[in-house]
Every structure is written in C-alpha cells, then in structure tokens.
Image 1 (cartoon, helix red, strand yellow):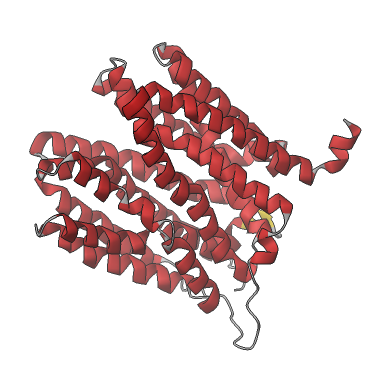
Image 2 (cartoon, helix red, strand yellow):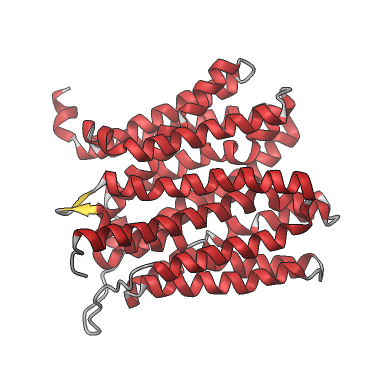
Length: 399
C-alpha cells in the first residue's frame, strides 16, 4: 500500500473513526442490556450466564482465525465488510423465540463475525497511524476516541429508551446499530496489502519466542484479567455498598470521559516515556486503582480517583499495546499479532474472569473479587517491569 495524500489520509481516518464509533456503540448497547433483555424473556440466571459468556468464548478462536486469513489474503477491508454483513443478517434471528439454544446459535454466529473486527480494523489502519515508521499517537488517539464516544452515547440513549419503553425493542436496536457498522465498513478505503503467492508467509512463532514478546503478552493477560472485575462486577459491587443507580452510572461515565480525554491528548504525553516505560506506569496505576476500589470504595472521592485512573489503566495501556504490537508484528504478521492481543487480552481473561469471579463472589462475597484483582494487578506490574528491563538492560545495569 502506498502512502495516502494528506486529504485522502484524513478521509480514510474518518472512515475508520466511523467504524470505531459504530462498533463500540454496539458494544455499549449490547453488553449492558443483553442480560436485562434475556431476563425480560423469562430466562433464569444459568441460561443468562451461558448466553452472555458466548462473546468471550468466540474471542478464544475467532480473532486469530480472521487475523490469519487477513494476513494470507491481504484483504482486511473486504473481510471486515463481510463480517459486518453476516453479523447483521444473523442478528435478525433475535426476533424469533425458538428457545435458549436458538439464541445461543444466533449469538455464536454474530460474535464470531464481530469479535475480530477491531483487530482487523487496527491492522488495516496501521499504515495510516504511522509516521516515518513510528507510531502516530495523535492520529490513533483521534480515531479511537470516537469508539469511546460511541459507547458513551449509546449506553445512555439505550438505557433511557429501555427505561421508558421496556426491553421489547432490544432486537430492533441491535439491527439498527449493526446496520451502522455495515455502512461504516462500506465507507472504508479499499486497502489491500500486496500478497505474493510464491512468497512464504512469515511465521508467528519466531516472534512469540522472543522474551520481550512473551513477557508483554503475560503482562497484558494479567492486566486485563484484573480489569475484568470492573467490567463484570463493578456495578453489583457498588449496588451492594448502597450507591444509587444514578451514582453508579455517573461513576461509569467518569471512566469513559477520562478515556476520551486521554485519546484526544495522548500525543502530548506518550513521548515523555518509552513505550515499555508507559507499560510499567499503566500497570502501577492498575495496582493503585484496584487497591483503592478494594479498600476505599465506600469513600466517594477515593472511588472517583480510582475511576479517573481508567485513563491510564485502559486508554493509555491500549494505545501502548497497539504501538508495541505494530513494532513486533509488522507487515503480514500484523493481523495475527492484533488477533493474539485480542485472544490473550480479552478472550481468556474474559472467560476466566467471569467464571472465577462468579465462584469467588458466590463463596466469599463481591469484595473478594476485587481483592483477587489487586493481587493479579501486582502480577501484571511484575511482568511489565520485566518487559521494560529487557528493553533497557543498560539502564538497569547502571542502576
């Protein structure tokens, strides 16, 4: 792919921003309200937990399969469009009530085709968010913040709608937002990476055998696993502590707002440290966040501080990981590298965090989940420090 002219580059970045906004709008609508819709259908807790876990299960296999296919063909944008269309068509099945296994099949097909969309999108966008071979934090942040805005707007709009009209319109909301994803994918530039049929496709295993890469993935795994208690149990935890629904919503909003602020301004801050230095700082912020949430959640100012750390524990961490992946998995390794990040960071931690957190909270209460996450965040910090030490041996030796 050749470098785009400035005007074409801006247009292309806008189309990726539109896809980010619509995709995360779907996440912001679907993830919080799917359990409520299933409950409205009369399903029990076991059936609801089974159906809501399907997205995490698809992240164990779908991202890497799609990433490998995109590396093999070079057709990342066409695959994105195909996946969006199949997800839209399969979502029509939610309008039919044929029982739990029918819903499970519909969700399996839908999430198999959406769970790899962001890794493929970021792999396709990589040449647009690089400047002279280096990661362009400003361009990436300006694209990614639209995903956060899409999430924030949709979670509030859908919540207000369902509060007023009930959950019966859930399938219609799903179709409309996936239609927006299809339209956004259609706006993407027809980018294709050159693939030479007689050229041997680079293997991913030599990269994974590199010690910095192994420790990077270990750090990412523990970091996001610690985050899972926020995604899954935070609202329940605050409700048990006596916080109102309005205050719970505001605390969620604070985290998304600082996330948007970080993505908008990250080009100012990222040059201040090396990428591996930021990885350590983000992990340290996660330790502090989990510590405050575990010990001081009843103290509102401290809980607000913990939520504001989301700018580092999620937004900065995500951008740093994308930049490091672009460095370690260039060219035709890019799709598989991004896919491995999704599988290791969100697939396995999503399934393990939900199951282990559920078992812990059932036996020892919700506070135990956050105590365990504090311990896991310490493991993430240790792994991040190992990555930094491997990249800066001279600094460590002088110390």
